[in-house]
Amino acid sequence: MSPEGASPEGRTGVLLVGTRGGDGPGEVLIRIRGGTETFRAYSEVPLPKGTAVLVVEQRPHRAVGVVAWTEPFTP
Image (cartoon, rainbow, N blue to C red):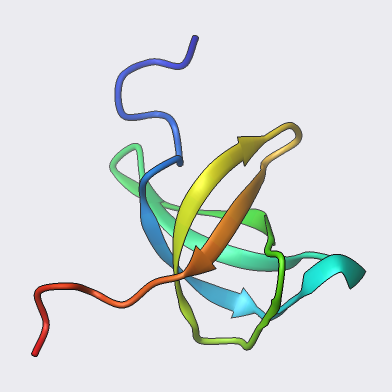
């Protein structure tokens, strides 16, 4: 089990490299463990570089599943 705060699931980030849906991963920058880290990012649909995302799944080998995210409290 991961230490408290160590899981990327439920965190938001920004794509540094766009995802290609089923054709391959991109790369996401996430605030975690008191800093920022990059993970390979997989999504069901292609998402362009710069997209804000929500991590919905932690995968092996520093990879995560993501979906596009819009901050709900921003006007």
